[in-house]
Image 1 (cartoon, rainbow, N blue to C red):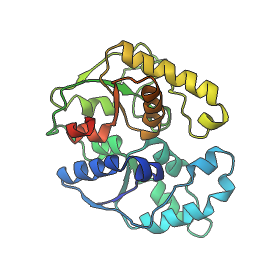
Image 2: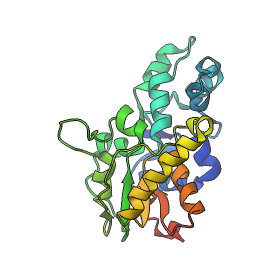
Image 3: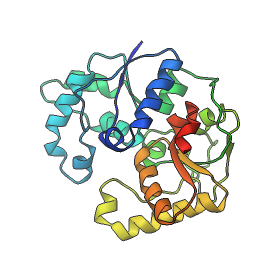
Image 4: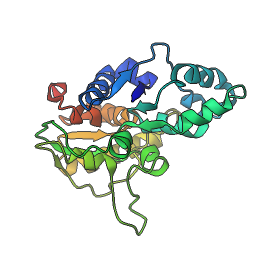
Length: 249
């Protein structure tokens, strides 16, 4: 198979190590990966702010960049969900529909398509797993705790394949961090308070590293941790699955 690597704009600008870890991990698993050089923002920030009607250019460019791949993989649940739910194009709607059906967040691609059962990685740290809302409630990457249903978590399943990882238990494991894209700008005070509560849950339960499948949530919590001068680090799950211990330094 040939996979198109879809890297969100904020990851490209602020966390390129996450893109590199994603590429390295997929290649280790035998996947042929191509990175379309002309890709830009998927349009999610505009759509979240009520301006989805202005995202036509983003949609057209996304289709042009990714229409020829067997699968499209992205290390971000929110961006993946945006494309899966909102990619449309009046001139190329059939192609857009096909793309919506083959775009995957990284951990769901590893579990559902590649069906990974073993990883060659070590990460000897106590890790708190943040279940981002888009991934959990939109992409169904993990079970919601308010449901009377068997629990599951695709990201946690993969983490448990990494040698040395100790996954800590949180008091409120699927609580929102408060980032919410443009919500953190429009409702800054509420967003920060939610972020502080989410960080405290991880810290008080002994996390050395907070991880997740969406770097935007981790970016929000990282800002809070830095202001608190906390030694706790944040790392995207791709970095841990790839065994990138040096990223902690």
